[in-house]
Length: 117
Image (cartoon, rainbow, N blue to C red; front, side, top):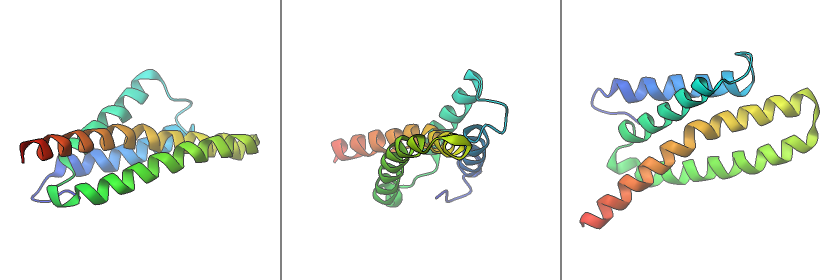
């Protein structure tokens, strides 16, 4: 992903994934509004700083698939019920919280690039 020394984007991605998993699994005692906002903002930073022009198509494909599968998966897993269902649903929701804004930012940036050409 990040090239040319873009450490902020790399760290945002790493911290965002870790926080999405921790909050999604409920290991932090439940996600508070500021925690949710933090993961969402990290997703925006990832979208702004991590994806180069050559990576846009691969990122958008992977991002859209991940968001769709996580969304459908959380609905399916919720039907399972129990502790495992609760944890898996939280995990999938946490991943969506990071990747939805990142994917939207990359898509909007790409649309502007297409409009310029």
